[in-house]
Image (cartoon, rainbow, N blue to C red; front, side, top):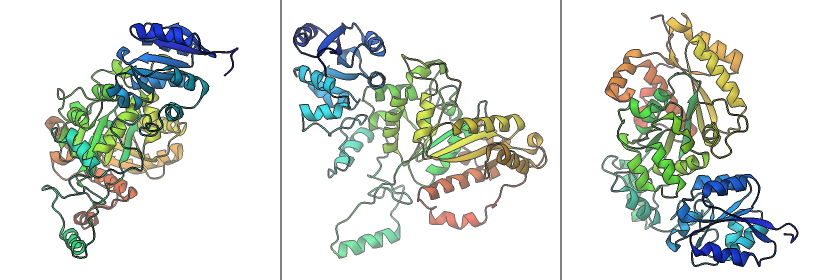
Length: 500
């Protein structure tokens, strides 16, 4: 740090604390107060203009995760002065939180000298606190690699029990690694009981089964209405029927319809309330259970935005925090992502970009399901979407689903025609073809339920059952024994579509 180029500091504090800090910083070499801001909007504008590298803010102004991430993106680190009880919560937002009675000058000096994140500064100021919370972790979370006996059950059950939310690792069982104790809804298998008795006779300590690693499945697709919501809903239901807790999130910012499809119109504020809680570090198990009601056995649904004009309320960093909570609530998280739309040149400096949430979800996904409609215009749009996705950085396995395939729209050899077009123009060699079953879709929509609950045998549902089994196998979770015999009688390939 050079005395000729002092580091700019922004202040936005309440009361006499700001006056006192201005006087003290005036005597600090290498630091200068460039502006005393009235609100967070002025702080943001000053940081974007490049006036400061450190911002000292009062928690009473409404500091949240999105603001901290935005300021960090423009090269500024934040210090939040708050009540002592709120220090862990603000630490979890990625800022450096200080109790009001703590002198902030050493922290300002350390942040000005260090260009790294606040974790290094925390180590200088308070070695015991440093590392206890990683930026973005919710308060009360133990450091990675630390196990506290009974901590998971006590913390999760306290927030979720009243809301009826299943706590992973504390109850229920699943194929491939379930909860630590069987529940009445999922009795202990005889083989499991025998093994348990052998361990007890041998004097071996009981080791609870480890919870399966949560998997994130992102459903996206072409513009229009190819059936993204329908596929997301019924795929989530097929995953949930294996006994694993599944969370379905409607993150389609432009036209979410999952709540309407399932008849959850007035149940909850949904996505907007969840991201608001995540922004302020207050999204815990109980809050999530209240906002994501149970729509079926093993399936929770977080409804989307009420209006597309509210899309700026959802930022990528808030969505990441929301997914962290959702993956603690279920072993499968199925998210309907917003479709990619044209971005404004330069994006929104004072808010999230139009495609930030979509890019964040696609980048974090373990499985990406790309949905298109089985007719000429739908296939053209699907090909363009696949080309757009090629420009993004993703690590998840991409699977292409062609929905509502029918001979009346795609010709008498609909399956062959679609497969040939996708292989030729998008290099997709193994599309998943879902036959059109209008009767089943209408029956489920009128009842506000899923295909499974609507009843009846259907080639369309069989395809999604197969897809769910494929995802489970890819995750190392084989189908339950009772399913394996049934698989032999299911049609091995999609039946040829015929004209209506």
